[in-house]
Amino acid sequence: MAVGKEIRKQIKSIQNTQKITRAMEMVAASKMRRAQERMQAARPYAHKIRQVINHLHYARPEYKHPFVLEREAKRVGFIIVTSDRGLCGGLNTNLLRATLIEMKSWHDKQAEIDVCTIGSKGFAFCKRLGANIVSHVAHLGDAPRIEDLIGTVKIMLDAYSDGKLDRLYLIYNRFVNTMSQQQMVEQLLPLPAAAEDKAKLEHHWDYIYEPDARAVLNDLLTRYIESLVYHGVSENLASEQSARMVAMKSASDNAGTLIDELKLKYNKARQAAITQEISEIVGGAAAV
Amino acid sequence: MAMTIHVDIVSAEKEIYSGLAEMVFAPLVTGEVGILPRHAPLLARMKPGEVRVRTPSEELSFYVSGGMLEVQPHVVTVLADTALRAKDIDEAAALKAKERAEEAMKNRQSDIDYAKAQAELAEAIAQLRAIQKLRDRTRK
Image 1: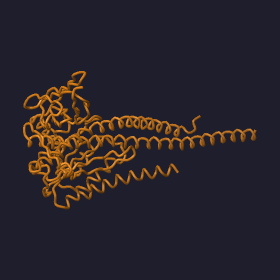
Image 2: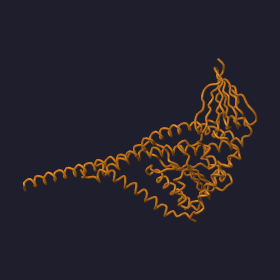
Image 3: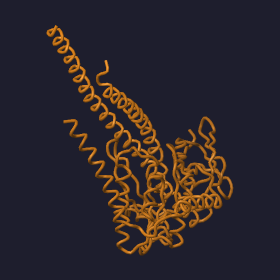
Image 4: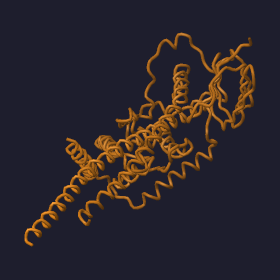
């Protein structure tokens, strides 16, 4: 029967789309789980380093590393972490909007802006925006390694040490839970002062440094910043996967409702055709 | 029972080892050290090499490509680097990242047009909202 051939075709094509979105949803779900694990695995390191740095602040209050000194903000650096691929709902758009608001507020204060992008989406956006991109890395894959980030972060840290930057911010999506991600604008440099903890000062002790305190502190702070950026990247990855999962789930649901509607339409058309045929036959028989 | 010291070996990407040990050996830039329980607090830079952990039953060994060693009387923390770190290697990586950025910056606009960018983003968000609304409507 030739009735509703177009509708059938349409249903078929939507079903194919639905298959794809459903597969993507499942892939994203499993990737999200792994990304979450990776996020958790990175925690002890950042925690330990933070502890050591805090202690150094107490043990050596006289030595101030440039990373802790407040300066007047004439030039601000942003490290923007986005995903490489789309199809993840409003994740990147929302993040870039938050970025833009932040950048604008610095712009209004007459501060210059340098940008470092991690991920293609942020890069494309900043390029279109005409921002001054000083370093860039993308395609980190599903298991980002810290060595991929070292170079990118180093440019920003060096610029800060040389006095070319007075503030450094990290912008990424924080993974709250599967359904929600939060845009974060975190100040990396100067390091926010450690929470006052006077109890620690009561029994004063200090490390033996090898080779010397200054070099060790420098190494530690660099690694600390790197680990924060790495953490941002892994949070963003988990956010990306969960956002994609949700987006793909609703796409599959939408396809489902569309198919239902089209099926109804198809059946109606089919029945109408049958009724018409019967009435034609009856009409023909009556005429004879 | 012999005295033991708690050892944590962590890298930025994962926890590598956590447990008790009788003695820990680490390759510092100034030479290898052996840490026994109740060692004085020490903070040191490591060079690439082997961290050995002697537990009551066996001796474990982990390769680290440098990092930091923190010692407190009852805890040893090895903050291992996963990547080989040297000044020139870092420098090369930085240069690469910069090149990538410069490459793409060749044909950029002169100034940031905030208004335009904001409008574009607002449009994208409006589209997303519209889709959401459409979906809500079909559900009802």
